[in-house]
Image (cartoon, rainbow, N blue to C red):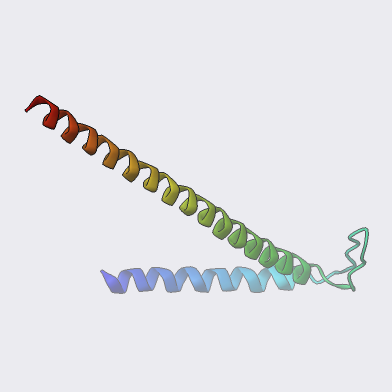
Length: 101
């Protein structure tokens, strides 16, 4: 079963590589990117698209990591509040048992 997974991953990687090569071959026109405040040098369209795709992926990962850290911090705070409330509830239960005796 492991060899099947390896085979599928290998075929998918080869297919992605082939699509990337074909994409690069078919998009060779030179373009200049104007970002209002800065003008990027002229390069092939495929280079700019792949570069911005990579930049977007990195930006997405950074935002996801930041969001995960914020959520982990909130989860830790909620767990601490829960533990405190659980301890208080246990103390109240034992206190009521002591009063009943």
